[in-house]
Length: 214
Image 1 (cartoon, one colour):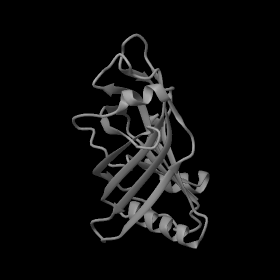
Image 2: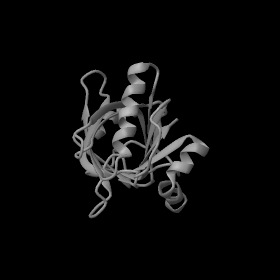
Image 3: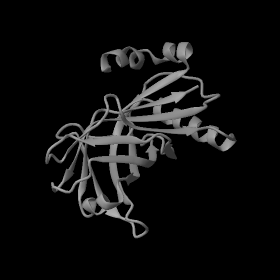
Image 4: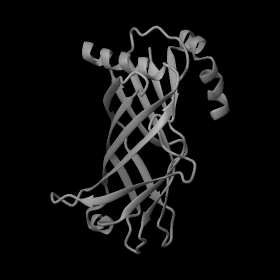
């Protein structure tokens, strides 16, 4: 899929006119030089034992060095592919399945050259199902092509202005700094929820994308 994406990145001016989309590679700024895992420490809330977790990342991603007209921006979609997942430390009582039912992603993107900054809070409307690989494994299978897919939609003038500022930041040559915070909650059978307390959920991730919609 990356090969398919490269022509858009190389000529996204034309791509923008034809499809109304502007792709951004690795908008969470994840460093893939040494490892490609995102670890989320799980905690149980007091009300009903609902497992929750969070993950933070500070990194950089490269601009799309292109000229676009900053107008009529209507949305931003952030997609982070999840290749697999595992719970550590392992246990015989781990849940057979885990549903990631609520995801909130907050990202602040800053252009070091101009000092411009923008913060967006994105929500994922669809659940993500993780299924235990079988036996006593602590590995969980993720449906092919699944991942965290969160959106920010322009419903008012302030939202449009926020997205326009994001477009300015990601199209002005050079690298951008990004601070990302992911908050999520899980759903498991009540009798299995305690099995996740004080454990770590580790996602194997791929290089995610952001897509600005015009």
